[in-house]
Length: 106
Image (cartoon, rainbow, N blue to C red):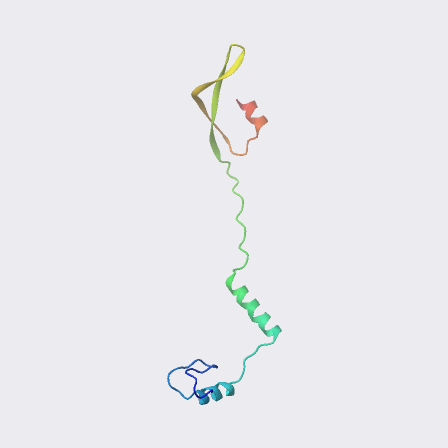
C-alpha cells in the first residue's frame, strides 16, 4: 500500500523517488522540538526585535500659538436678540483661552 502511493506522506515529494526510501530518510532526521521555555524565549526575542525602545518625549512647545475665531454680530430687534446673517468679526486670541477670559477680552 505504501509502495503504491503517488507521494510521500512525510515529505510530500512526488518526483518519482522511492516512497519508502524517502520515508526512512525523513525518520532519520533529528527532531527539533523545542521545550515550552525555549519557545517562549524565542518568541519574546522576536517580539522585542520588532519594536523600538521608548523614544524620548518632545518638550512641550512653550510658544503661545494665536488662533483666529469668528465672532457673530447680533442686534436687539422688537425686544429680542436677532443674529445678523453674514456678519462676523475675526478675533485673534491664544489657543488656550477660556470662556470667561474671552468675554473679558471682547
